[in-house]
Image (tube, rainbow, N blue to C red; front, side):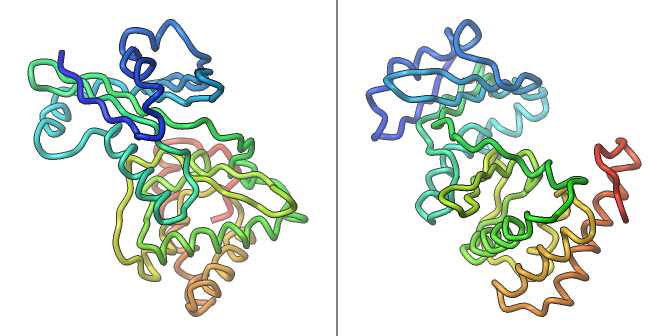
Amino acid sequence: MKKKILINPKYEHLRSFITSLPDTFSQNGKVIYQSRNELRVFEKAGLSLNVKQFGIPLFFNRIIYKGFRPPKALRAYEYALKLQHLGINTPEAIGCICMSRRGLLDRCYFISLQVPYTRRFYEFGTAPLEGKEEIIRAFARYTARMHEAGVYHKDYSPGNILFDIREGKPEFCVVDINRMKFGPVGIKMGCANFARLWGQQPFFRILATEYAAARHFDAEVCIKWVLHYRQKFWKAYSQRHPPEFQLDL
């Protein structure tokens, strides 16, 4: 078994903990998510550490990762550093481990600081918008800043957008960032980025209007494209899975 280990120099003092994770992960820490991938929180050196263990890829994907695509853990680590450099809030990257067996990718780990945000965008599924309009507008401006910086989160879904109200203002944090695209983000591409979010049409109209203002786009055009891509995504999704909130397509 071969290991590739990268550690943020700021957290070199955690090296022994990080290098031991392949042997100790399943026996320690607090499980906060468990499926194909698993998330655990560890308390070390006065820090709360979030460790994501990626499931072993299917055989075909293991071949792809061998020479054509960086492993998810490596992408998560490198993208976190890039987002932080651009001033986009995401959990601080601590390190990553990529393991291989007989030349094929095996288990991988991404280690970051655990963030304190308690709210997810799921709450906008069917909840009344009264009193939440400023959160929606602030989120639109936050997304506009990401897009202006050439950052496009390819899994911009409710569970990957964390937020809380800090000192009276909404504060946002993006997670699960191993699927990102970097480069110019135009009006259609930007509007399409909201398609996976939960919410009713009034939510998206507020969102699109503020996003347009932040990027100096035409508001009516943004509303049209946001609603178009939302409808396209959820029509296809609802044919495979029952939506977990009431859709108003």
